[in-house]
Structure formats: C-alpha cells, structure tokens
Amino acid sequence: MSYIKLFMEKYDSLGIRKDTFKKFFELCEERKVKKIVETGTTSIIDWARAGCSTILFGEYCMCNNGHLWTIDNSPSAISESKSHTVIYSNNITYVNADSINVLLGFKDKIDALYLDSVDYLGDEAHKEISRQHHMKELQSAYNKLHDQSVIMVDDCQVPDGTMGKGELVIKWLKENGWEDVTSGYQIIMVKI
Ligand SMILES: C[S@@+](CC[C@H](N)C(=O)[O-])C[C@H]1O[C@@H](n2cnc3c(N)ncnc32)[C@H](O)[C@@H]1O
Image 1: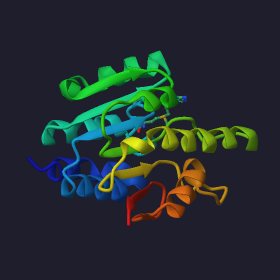
Image 2: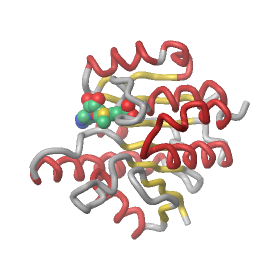
Image 3: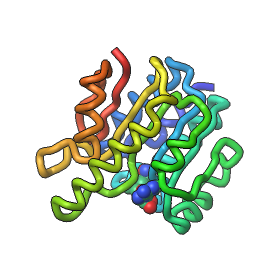
Image 4: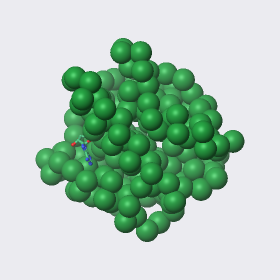
C-alpha cells in the first residue's frame, strides 16, 4: 500500500519540512526502501517544529512492510517515542544508546538514513560538536549504505547562514559521488 496518501493527511502540519519529507517518501517508494535508520527519536509531538520523524517513518514501514531502527541516547526520549508509536511498534526497533556506537556495529544494509541527533544550538563550540557528531554518524553508517540509499539530514540551512547539522556531511558526500536533490531545512542526498 502506498504511504503517500496517508502522508498527505499530515503534509500541511509539517511546516518547513513538508516538501522535503514528501520527496523523501516518494524516493523511498520508488527505490523500494525497507530498512530505515534514524538518529534522534521523536520524544515530543510537535509536527511543525520537530517533524515527528519516528511517527512518519513508522507509518511508512507499516504500509511498506519495512523496518525502522530509531536510535537515541536518552532513556526518556526512547520511552516517550515508544508511547507515541505504539501502533507501528511491530515495525520499529528502539535503540537506547549512542548513535555512533550503534551505527558502527549495525549489521544490516541501510536503505534510508536520517540524521537528526545532537542539536545544532548554542555557542560555536557546541555547534561544532553537532557538525562533527553528524559527520561521525555518516562515517559509521557508510559501509552499510548502497547505491540506491537515500540520506536525509535535518536542521540544515539554519539562520547563521551555514548548513547546520549537515555542514560537514553534505560537503563530504558531494565530494564522494552524491548529490543533493532538495534545498532547504532538510537536505536529501542520493548517489549520482
Ligand atoms: C532533534 S531531537 C530528534 C527529533 C526527531 N527526529 C523528530 O523528528 O521528532 C534530537 C534527539 O537526539 C538525541 N541525541 C543527542 N545526542 C545523541 C547521541 N549521541 N546519540 C543518540 N541520540 C542522541 C537527543 O536525546 C534527542 O532526543
């Protein structure tokens, strides 16, 4: 069953992420994505501000016989996420640990990867920790990705004029044979 019709019920609530999430799910269906991994789970239901990725990915997996691994190092975030996604829980593995360690040890192929963990906030030192963490997540996941994988990074094109969480990830991917297929707050990358 295509997920797009169900997704469109949420489209108008998704604010600056609505078109990029739509593109992401269209690509996932075109490419028959079954295995999605995300860093940073949904602990708060706030469609416009946070995006509620775990709910959307869980719904996609339920409709497409797929599976989502949602990784978060906060026990309370995982517990909240479980409570928001009970109806998709057969299609979700909740992992309460540091994202880099989990991605390094991940055994499956990854058809779609969503990076949205360490917040890009505060002073320059903290922003650099966020950029570096997302870059390390990509490096840790990279040998599980394949030519048809879809990568999306949240909190890009931020008010300070940089690419936020995606600053290092997107630059590196572009230098290594990937291209961006969206612009805006979420960047989607696919292999050329
Ligand atoms: C912006 S929120 C995720 C929002 C979620 N993707 C959504 O759309 O609703 C970021 C999450 O990343 C988690 N996080 C921060 N550092 C992490 C790390 N090193 N490993 C795993 N998760 C981390 C936080 O606990 C927080 O729950």
